[in-house]
Image 1 (cartoon, rainbow, N blue to C red):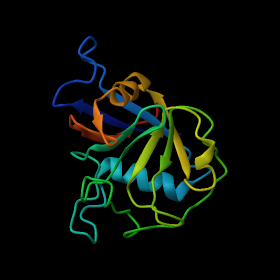
Image 2 (image 1 turned 180 degrees about the vertical axis):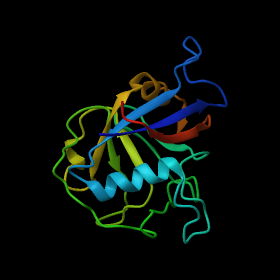
Image 3 (image 1 turned 45 degrees about the horizontal axis):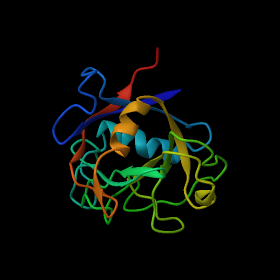
Image 4 (image 1 turned 90 degrees about the vertical axis):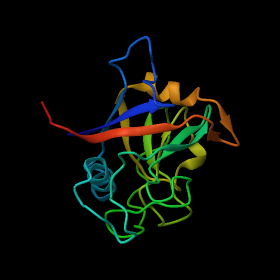
Length: 179
């Protein structure tokens, strides 16, 4: 099993001041079902691939959650432009949809954001509720196993036109060692 983490700040602060040691979202990747998609996310968490074709480091660290749609999803991973119009995969700019086997049937699922068929980059989202309308369009490749309270804190961030008005930043990301 492969686990990765995203350490989050909201407006430069810990997301849950009442529990200051709790600022991580931990995800389990579905490597057995979607190995290519999972490897893309894992490598972007560690930053191990260096600089991409875009000239940006292939790494989630210091990128933001640029889209928050309460009751639907939170979206991040655009480390090139930061606004949902960029992103890059470890395979080049875009890569193909791998499998639609897993469904968007609950909150806490990790799925690829895209701009149409076979346009996956680095952008991802976490579901906040079942989203069956996304099935067959977005590849589910993991799930939150710790830190749903952080996801909920991000969901509660004030927004204007689905954009957080406070910076929701990934200040650290990486892979956790299996126990």
